[in-house]
Image (cartoon, rainbow, N blue to C red; front, side, top):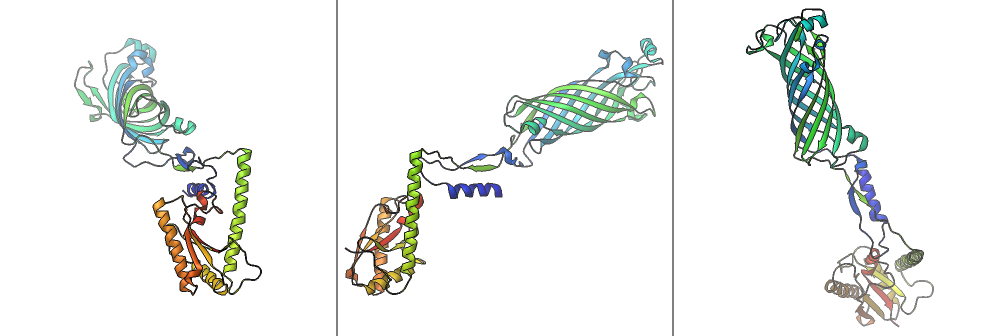
Length: 413
């Protein structure tokens, strides 16, 4: 936030209204600053997937490829914590098909073809795994290419683990009732998994998914006390629905407008800045001289040269702060001179309206006259007027507006 604040201050301090069509500071999101975290209830999603997997343990390979394919299904709920990192949990159903030499789970009669392949008495088996799984996900596309709202494709690798419980049909004919295998055999299977989730955005809220997964599954169902590991690749397709806030917001930073000038415009601008420097130096010199008591040394300016200027805050006609010292010094000079004076009330035309500015001009010049009279200056020596322009000698645009909120005092001709 400090970086953003400093940029905004830089724009405010150094951007001068040099041309009439000068742009304002604009604010835009800057992805280079990272992304802000959303509320916990945002960026959730739910989904469903279905597909097929194949068992590939040392015994399963004896079964023809097509006979080892089994259905899979997932119900998913998950959350993205940033444009890159997310978690998901799911309920799973796996139909497992393969071979065993131990005669556990569903089996059919001896398969001579299997026997010849495996060199053992073998049985075809299948069982169902039901369980839960959890995955940690990384949005690789956002990580490498940067987050972009509305991107159609995202590649999301993940790693995770799962636990399943096995169910089989009792009886060698495969027509018995479904039975939890854990009633008489170990039937809790653990697995480690990794995969690539391919996400295709259909709408802002709906994605189509292609999940390519590989698991190392602990297969207890090859026989009591025989805990083998089976390779288990699978592929699933599905959909995911995203709800609440679905996108991410980058911090907002100020953009300073860029001005381009012709050579003539640049020369004119430099001339105005130099004139402004001279006017400021002259004003500072007047204030220093006004602060000195008694007659000022050297020749006094004649004609319309200002004796002093009393400045006012915006929309104020009361003499405040150091301006009281200016009025005191001017009164001392007037009391020692036998001259008349012209007081002119001003207000800037960059703020307020004509009615307000006219009132301010009249009130300011009346306030200064009253203060001088109160310090002993004869009222008939003070002539007052107002001018409805910005002060022409110090008008350099809106930034110079405070110099027109004033009462100027000159010696009358």
